[in-house]
Length: 277
Image (cartoon, rainbow, N blue to C red; front, side):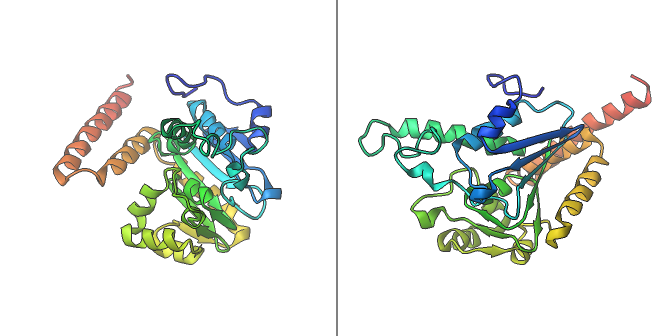
């Protein structure tokens, strides 16, 4: 298993997955995670995200590709708004618990949100390629979940929306950086502060979707992408993703140095393999 140093060492049980309204299927190098709450348009709760983090911490080491989708005709309507009620959802902590009476501090709230963010952060790991298969709506947290993935394949009925500002909130599930990285600050401001819906074809033009297909072709297109990704040497793929992830923050000279270091490691590995070591 691949896990964080202080994280769980065994995967979530079927009962834990069911309570989080998630399904997990692992077949060799491919893990498929499905948000399974179609009666609520796959709305998510804190338990969804902490269980996603648990999945990421305990994936088998031979998993290379993670595909995330929603059950039925929508990806996710975002956070279950019941999370903002005093009683929360299904026994979970309310997002606003203790804030009105001052019994929760800012630090406690930030620690709680940090735990939720872990459900999104692991999707950037360089040893994995993550694919969001999006049909229908990806709203708020659903949009941020798709943005956390390396590759987004959209059905042409997909609509993306960063709803949080319209609710008096900010996007806090790690979605602002990839959004700005992809579309730039000005367009990101427009998308977020109008909370408008971005259709699949516009998403493709903006770089928010790598591929747009008809709804009945989505599963096949994702399978084709997975097959193409698996055809690449795993260690080379991991090293290349790590290089690409640091490129935006590096100067040209820093990136050139990083490329040299990565290539030296790959050449050494290939030489050892050729020599039978």
